[in-house]
Image 1 (cartoon, helix red, strand yellow):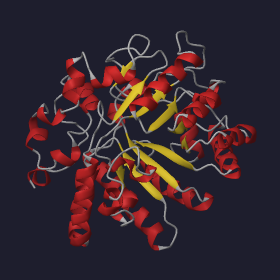
Image 2 (cartoon, one colour; image 1 turned 180 degrees about the vertical axis):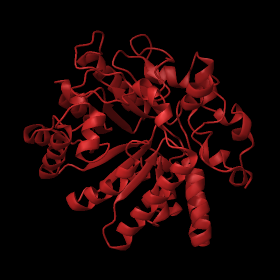
Image 3 (cartoon, one colour; image 1 turned 180 degrees about the horizontal axis):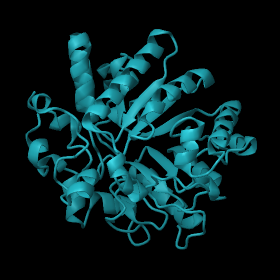
Image 4 (tube, helix red, strand yellow; image 1 turned 90 degrees about the horizontal axis):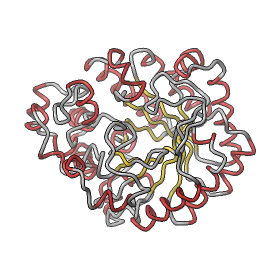
Length: 393
């Protein structure tokens, strides 16, 4: 992820991360992306069940029971292993994680073990009572997915009234004192909603938003033709930077991040190089700390059935199952050649990625997106929007 507000609005300095030794166990959450050890943030899809029908769902979630989900005790065993391994954050996702009745118990257990527990949810099931429970157990953050304002969001979510219920969920979190933010997946059908999302941040005093670039996985794989063109992506990132700066300059700063396209890092740096060369030097140092895409190294995923993936989108390639082998062993002593290669992906990328001057701060971008479109996991990411001139440096 690229911290637009951190980098573009000067809210983080390289010294901020260096002060903590860049150790993931010591860094505060807003600096975690600059860690040196890259202990994996783990996304655990605790269920495949969901009460909505989102058109871009990477998990192919449905509102039906699914067999073979990890039990509560198996989940606690996973958390024990992750905590001992040093994973700093456990992100509980789905499906819709709140359909599992033991979610508060599992999240509380992670907090007790010293991990930061966060959830990614559609927000529609967060009642005042649930919000109070999540606050009580020490949940660090609730990310609520919206893909536009009411008409657009409800069309994406496949259920009328989803937007209104999500807004109520946000308000319930705020009333309970839980940090809550938005998650927005950008594509052709909703890119014009970005200004409305910024307006919503300001109107509801929501402190954080993550704008996700589309990844071709799950039901989202059918939306390849709906992804933005390179020119449209550049315009969207420009808009996000402009609106982030506007809020900052008006004394209403928000934490704004873009996710799943690490071309955003060089693009932001090149823009700053024209406007503020001194700040651009600091940003380049921070981007080098960030290291770009970390699928298979600084981020991993455990599915509802215990399968381990490089990230939450790469569900067609498992590296093992925690029922047979702990996550920590799978991750550090891989028996799979691809997982080994992902940990040093810069040696394996091809084409313009291999010769790109930004490879050290992009990390080769998303391999799963390249594979989805070309069949070659090491081909250039088709969503990279840097020009040939920018790539040469």
